[in-house]
Amino acid sequence: MDVLRTDGITMQFGGVRAVSDLKLNIQEGEIVALIGPNGAGKTTVFNMVTGVYKPTSGNIFYTKETGKEVNITGKKPSDIAKLGIARTFQNIRLFKDLTVYENVLIAKHLHLKSDFLSATLHLPWYMKEENNDKKEVEELLKSVNLWDIREEKSSSLPYGQQRRLEIVRALATSPKVLLLDEPAAGMNPNETEDLTGFIKEIHDKFKLTVFMIEHHMDLVMDISDCIYVLDFGENIAKGTPDEIQSNDRVIQAYLGVDEDA
Amino acid sequence: MAKKQKLILTILLLIVLFALSWVVNIAMDSYVRRIINLCLIYAIIGLSMNVTNGFTGQFALGQAGFMALGAYVVGVFTVPVKLRASVFYAVPMNPLIANIQLPVWAALIGGGILAAFVAFLIGAPVLRLKGDYLAIATLGFSEIIRIVITNASSFTNGALGIKDIPTLNDTRYIFVATAITFIFISLLINSSYGRAFKAIREDEIAAEAMGIDLYKHKCLAFMISAFFAGIGGGLYAMLLGTVDPKNFLFTLTYNFLLIIVLGGMGSITGSMLGAIVVTAGLEYLRVFDEPLELFGVNIPLFRPGFRMVIFSILLMICVLFWRHGIMGTKEFTWDGAREFVKHPLRMFHRKGVA
Image (tube, rainbow over all chains, first blue to last red):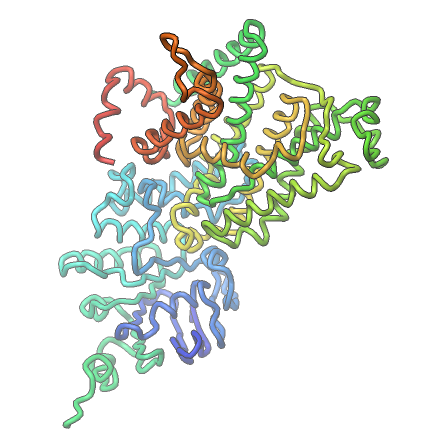
């Protein structure tokens, strides 16, 4: 079953067609990668799916937990997050001045049912929710080995940990689909390997569908079930890692065409 | 320290302060009382402004307008009915409200609610803006409020202002109002909504991706801020006994901006501290405004207005050494206080680092 599906979305910025007529079919539980050279429109796809941009044309559909498919085109990012699509950012966007713990706890706010008055007055039903959230955050942080540094300011963490924390923060919203925008950017091979393991781990543990943009081909080929290749906004190939590696158009897009041949 | 211990200490502190306000009320003359009351009222408004500017990170400068709304609701509805003919001598009061007189507490809360409602209306167009643009827009709306008040003569007595408002120069009541504001805002900031506000301050895009509805939360912060500014404005009107549109020029807002910047944007205890330092400081610097003779020579610098020069220099020094205000985004905590008592000099050690 497709958890996320688009029927040919196009994004036009003035004269630039950043993404044109992209059809995505992302199956529940898959790890799907979106690759392509710089400027191919990958992040634009993420921004459309998460509601930052409204596609110029085309629709995006998301299948809710109940099995009902809804059209999420042009919805507010906060509403899309509530439906169960969480994301990370290419350039880390943590809440810098807040602690690790606060960063993750904030992600629980979207499921809060109490209104602001009962929250402010710390009424019993709010406290119940709050304690519940805190317990869940504690469990989550412990399970990813961030509990010991929970009181650190998020901006004081080493780079790799910040990346990890951003993923954990997204996880705290209890998503069904996790969008990772270049999770391994700026990492060395060792860190990348750790991250690969981490993504696999959370994918299995939280029964997630992972949709990621990545440039590290080792990582992509290692864990993806399906790969989409974008070049100048066009979807030039789709398939399993093996199919993509032997695809001529993909090789051309990455390496160029030998004019003399 | 255990959580319970801290709570008991906080409650004790509040009781001691309340007792102190009682003593102030009996023992101090009305001049000192007035300064202390003004400190407390400015603390309310400083706190309210910190909700939008410090915690939610929205640079809004509409506080004077919301204060004016609160002040005028108190002014219009608490002047005794039999005095109204003499107050509204130029344009008679609109018959719709001419005979409505509210108890003080109802007028205060009504003023807060009106301010919050207006904030809700203003919020829709204004809160889409960010940074300097939001500042200008809110400043503009605050002036619009003032000008509407100036021209709605049959309700507000226009430029003549309203006099004969029952005065309240009673530190106990004002202290209670400040304490309630302080507790409410502390609880709010420590709730899930407060965390959401902080998330918006830190990174709007990330906050939105985490499912925080930006408009809804900004509007909420703006309304809460306006509500308490309205309450503060009402108390201010009662402290003065008169209201006049000129009291609420946009320059008034800068007082509170000063308070929160000096105290620390995003620090509740900082706002309290800032309110006291700014209000009391401006009063006690008045010695510089009076002519001074030393050894028979009249020092020419000492003349009206000189205190502002001194005050500005002090401010500059403050901002140079405490770049994020006295408290920064930190709060006064009992643990911090204990640490300070043990090692009073340690707080100066890290100064060079920041």
